[in-house]
Length: 194
Image 1 (tube, rainbow, N blue to C red):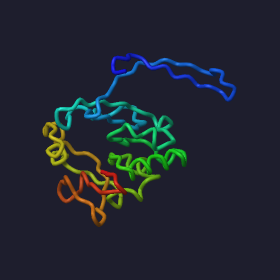
Image 2 (image 1 turned 120 degrees about the vertical axis):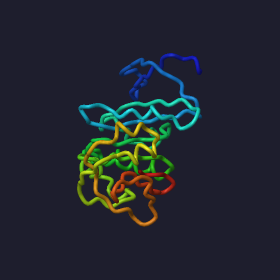
Image 3 (image 1 turned 135 degrees about the vertical axis):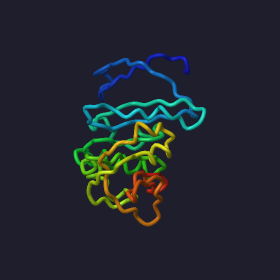
Image 4 (image 1 turned 30 degrees about the vertical axis):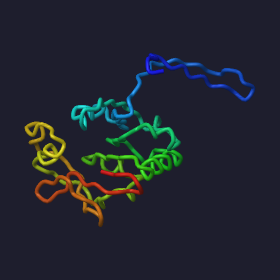
């Protein structure tokens, strides 16, 4: 029911006995709303993906640690976008990587943040990327990226570390600075990887 404020989950063993029961707050998300998940180990926390809603819909965000990524693609079906930011994908289980792969191939939108942690973030999924990664490079500004996502430019007018990459065939560079791609989009199955 759309007015439910809590959900109760019970784990039942083979004999039908409740092994564990927990209650948690629940918020209904309308089908037209956007649900982001940010998978990160960053001590600085998650990026705020809700600041620029794509249209009139409401936007919601949750933050996960790598061990919270579900090991089944079906459990990711409710997500619109999953952002990997400073998270070691090499530490994910084979089941988690397969679930993520199936989710993206089935139409999911995966965004990977590069920067200084690009090697950890891409270690298990480099073959899915729309770029070939070469190393790190310092760029003077991220303003072109800010223009693309309609973020205030002055907050991005500072030098930062970016992943040095070469776009693969069929991918599109959506934002770049001084010849360095900042945002590259490619297809992976029916899904999208940035």
